[in-house]
Length: 252
Image 1: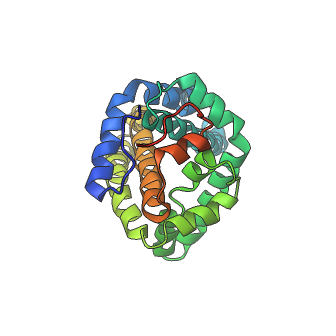
Image 2: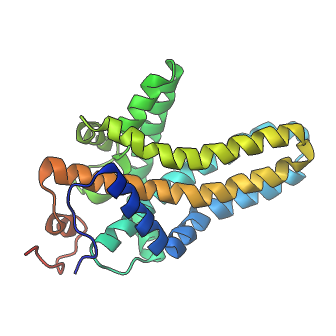
């Protein structure tokens, strides 16, 4: 039997439920975060500390690319984990990573195009980028949970699903963005004043990535469910079919 009921949720209910899922799955989510972004970034962090100053810019570029790729893979894995929870199945780190890896091409294509469009939008006085980010906020869940939605198809799918609800997406994003940016800005200012502590604050930034990113993905996975319930009458039976779970019980 499913643990959660798929029904329209308010912004507060989405955030509350996302926090409950995050707390319940904390160990699994942290394991995924460590595998997808923690270990690669720690390796690069170690390399950065021993790299001559002249080569730091190239390493910084590699650092950013690894973070982007790892975050996109992490998004797919967490969507799988949250979906398992909704179906009442025991989430598994291995299963989530296998599913994300199997759909890796589509997930990376959707994530890459999404990020490029957001970046281009931000170049035009910030606001267009925010609108694009809100409109494409459920692209990765669409790729993972809809077999017929592949790669860049998820861009148009997310844009259509979020139509009329992009303001909701913006409000939902405020909490994880604040939790991530405020400490990062404080660390950046402090490291500028005390350059010797820059490696320490870089490590703190990695920890923040591991803590905040999974929570944000939980929020927007639930937002995806909410949009489908509201617009398409989506229910657990449909979800089980999408995930290939023929044994899931039909709703009463």
